[in-house]
Length: 606
Image (cartoon, rainbow, N blue to C red; front, side, top):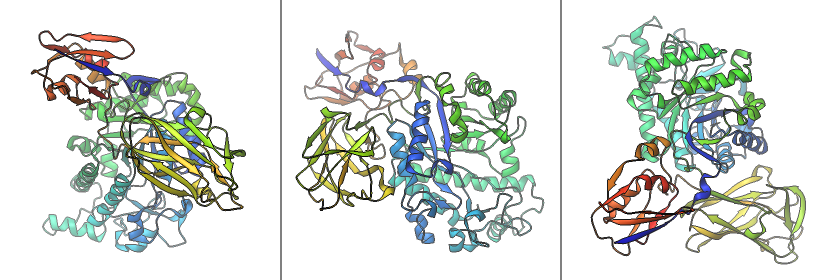
């Protein structure tokens, strides 16, 4: 009989975690995006309060907040001019993932394509300049809604494809955890009377025009069905590119006895859940009392069969009337007691005064989102100037007066050769995003030379601008395959530094890219799965193992099934701080093994 020797090599991953699941999410709106520092402080404070998901604004007031080729192809504009030179989505990913937090791209404005507040008089926004026939219309011919927004025609295939293309672009180019759609609805029942929608309705109803009564039940149903079809197409388009993206939505419900989203906005989010076109929803129910909130949750329970797909949302300041900290506790407790798996809270700005209260109370432990594994975002490492054992420094480096990631940064000139090598504890083999913490100043180089060495010893040189303030803080150097273990990954040197310029050096970071390495081993998918398997037994068969067998222990694949896939019967010996032996005399292996192996990456050398 052979033995398997197993080492739990990534125990550090779970430090600080409770193996329970609860969504603790909030929205980050434009008022937290004024600078990279402001956004970083926002995310740091959320992480310190044990929040685990952020919805970062990426589609706002008729503009993307990342450098969008799709938008540029339509309009000649890449990004909201307010954020020229920046990439809000990339900044949020860098800052949040270093805490293990999930990032969902929040399409706040959905079908809204323009706003009067950021345009000259009479202008509607760049997408409508490019496509004047995309503007949605009311029955009376009006276009602008009560919030000074212009909406795109919901039923147009080209409009729908435009929104889907924006989503696909992000999923293809960013290591996102999810996309949260918003305003996938009509502004009001007054809309739907544009020429395109009229023609489409007539084509499907024997030439009959849409009803003139805006609340006609068949007319609401038809418009809702068109949105439902859009949601299916969006879901399938995104999942085809990356099935691991969590697709969510932020619909509304403001009544304990009426399906208000549907009745007022043609938004059939219950239908989305039933047809599987969202993974989960963050239902907006912004009311001022726990009893009103409780009643709305009871109504949700009556219309939704699977509560695991619903995260109730509440506001700290509903209608301008701030709720108390005691009421915050009540809202969260009501959510838990009724069987829901967490809350989204509106929104960061209003939450700030309550972080200490939450961290010392109901959010005292770090937990992970219910729709994810506990370590989906836990593979990363940061090397700072305060870790001399991870640095190899040569040449003349001087302490600067400019702060970096953990204190004062360093700088050098070109008078003699100088370099710093950064090593990392690479937790598992896979593709990593590699970052430098860029310190900028008016006397720095515009081409800091940084070399990255990958798993195979290939070296890639990148030149980083240390003059541009938009390039300060974390700058991504690229995606590189790295080998598990202690590795020298980054080198910064002054070999191309010109006289009169200085070169900054500070921290560096690696984090597993889940877009490129989704199948890197993770732990048990969720606590429920762990409990379900305890006490069960699975047969392990047949004999024999071969001496060169290697078994990959992948996410949500049981250890017993992994052995079974290779064939064989084994005595198992575990090393997880203590030694354990299991003898499969029957031959059986208890599923207790799976619980003990929740940290294991590979089963080696049977």
